[in-house]
Structures are given as C-alpha cells and as structure tokens.
Length: 70
Image (cartoon, one colour):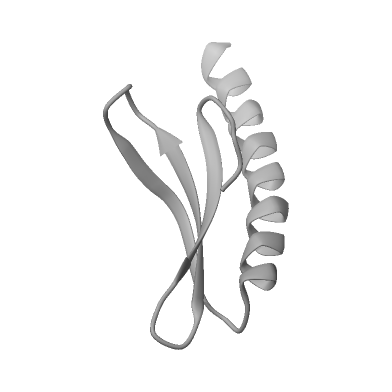
C-alpha cells in the first residue's frame, strides 16, 4: 500500500487472484473504494495497475475540481 494523504492504492489477495483498489480517505476514521479491478495473476500486476490508475485518477479529479470551481 502506498502512503499518501487522500488517495492510495492497495493490492488484496482473493482465493486465486489479486484485486487492485484505489482508496479515498473520506475522514480520519472512514475510507471508501473509488475504483477497483480484479482478476490479476500476481501482486506485482495489481500494484502496477494501481500506480497507473491512481495517476490518471488524480489528473481526472484535478480537471473536475477546476471545472467545478469556475
């Protein structure tokens, strides 16, 4: 799991596959999953997906926040 303030990604092992999740920190006590992809063969694949998707997710959120503030 990566360290960050508001958004992070995590890889979770299911029975025979891995799931990648992008997690958003809602408050100091509560988190929610913003995006999820499952069916990865290894933890490395799930982490690679998490890194790429987190970067794209943050860019998209930044653009959305800019539009909303105008």
